[in-house]
Image 1 (tube, rainbow, N blue to C red):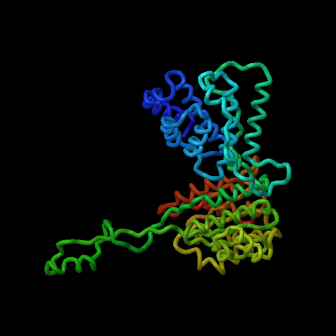
Image 2: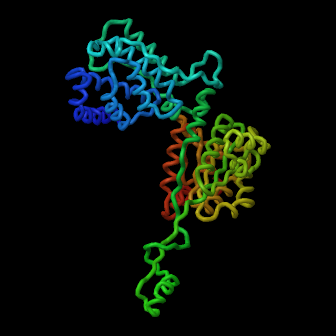
Image 3: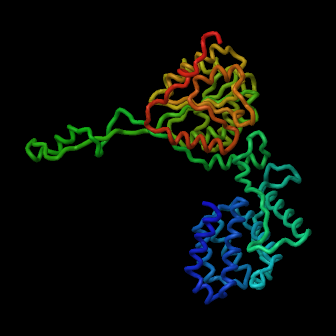
Amino acid sequence: MTNDRLYAEATAAWRRQIEGLAATQAAGSQGEGLLRHLLLFGRLLRRVGVQVNTSQMLDLLAALEVVDLTRRDDFYWAARAVLVTRRDDLARFDQAFALFWRNAQARDMPNFAPLLSQTPVPRREPPRKSDAKPGEDKPQERSIAIAEATDEETDSGDEAEETDAPDLIISASPMEVLRHKDFAGYTADELALARQILRDMTWELGERRTRRFRRGKGRRLDLRRSLRRNVRFGGEMVELAWREPKFKPRPVVVIADISGSMEQYSRLLLHFLHTLYQGMDNVEAFVFGTRLTRITHELRTRNVDVAVSQVAQTVQDWAGGTRIGESLHTFNYRWGRRVLGRGAVALIISDGWDRGNVDVLRDEMERLQRNTYRLIWLNPLLGMAGYQPLTRGMAAALPFIDDFLPVHRLHSLAELGDLLTELGAAPRPERKQHAHMSEPGS
């Protein structure tokens, strides 16, 4: 929902309640000014990462009827109770509250002198331990600090023209920054926050039509149930029972590269695999460097840190060389028959750097594609400006890939989730290699 729509809906709700609020608190222009600054405060909270929606703003407007606006502490606690729904947002709310009302007080707001004259006494959360280095600010603190510094520079210069709202310049929300930032550039704090975002992700996969039927309102006659139901009528088919097709989610098979060229992405992508396994049914996971290792058993552990630690102990070729063709050969001949049935979707996560035999890679990719409903290749380098799949491994695999997608940031994972959700019961897509297959020896 855009800020303009948020403002419009809240304004409409205010005008329906303005008479009652004006009778108990203030009248006329003061009520309009209070509404304007409340909505601006809601926008500020959204910019710094606190999730505030229209319903919460309307609830806060209703709460003002029983809040004494001359007591700033009462207003603070009412706003915090209504607008903050997560413990992690308390510190951001406190900082945004102090920043916003300090800037608002510096502007022309004569009608709100009683509200702004008192100093708030917010309850601060105790400092938490983090992996940040000494002197390094947390993302949310750095966002507020940028806004404060920008505002001080504005106040020290010439006076700006008067506007209807406090002149605030706020940096992007830490959440929004992380969603569009490359995994390789994460700091320790950002990596911890990204892991939390991955844990909160939900995954749904499009369903496929099976060969089985169930009771329902379909067009297929259930003869056995119909006979049992009509015994009391002497065998006459008076009441008929019907069956409908049964649908199930498609199996998902993930084959991830953990070689040296993928080291900057491997740890976070393992957290992604854990979230995928915990959030979906029938998921199989493999990793490879110079050889293939199945890690499905390790991902069953609920604690993601313990699961990643177990994977690190199981895998023997972590951050080593890359032999994609040989690893896929092992998968096709040892695991393919076990995990690729029932219209499975295969995800390969790799940058395409390969030291093995290119002919082997081409043959195994062709075999893997034939045995899957959809073959998706996720390449972290694809999101970089000017990247082209010119390495011999990537060039050999590309004709057999149904979907070639980036996987370098959280936003790309969200796009992958949308694609998986759209995979319904449609027929298998047309294979691209029929149009792009190169001639033998090329």
